Amino acid sequence: MSTSGRSALRELVEDFLFREAALLDEWRLDEWVDLFTDDARYVVPSTDLPEGDPARDLVFIDDDIVRLRARVARLNSRHSHRESPRSRTRRFVSNVRVEGTGDGELRVAANVLVYRFRSGEGAPYVGAVEYILRRNGGDLRIAYRRAVLDLEDLAWHGAVSIIF
Image (cartoon, rainbow, N blue to C red; front, side, top):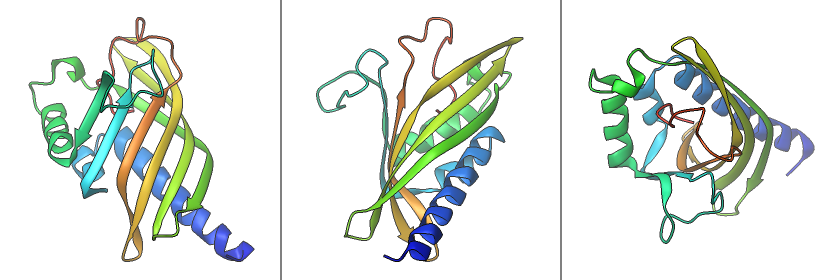
């Protein structure tokens, strides 16, 4: 791929990641979940085992699209006590790396910093997100999303009720 082709691809991916971050920060979760493919998987390993595999290890989140849609519905409902009132968040996405897989998918990695504000307190969530993205016409969709927190524990953060 030419340099201009790689630049255009990186720009497409970065715009997609920035749009995803904005949807999450604006609590537009229904639109966010629509970014996923029907066979998508979303994983957040525990802080004590960041390389954890949901097939054999305990993880914070291991959602297929059905569970992810249910999570979004709960977070949008009045039954989400952890997020009532909702947290305010601001996401920063950086160090985006894009690699083609040869089968039309893209492997993407990025560093993420999420500031969460709730009940008069603020807490940073620092980590990395790995994606497998698929082209869908002129746009991209998330087939796999793995968010790895760099935190040693969630003691002063409370929980991962926000979508990291």
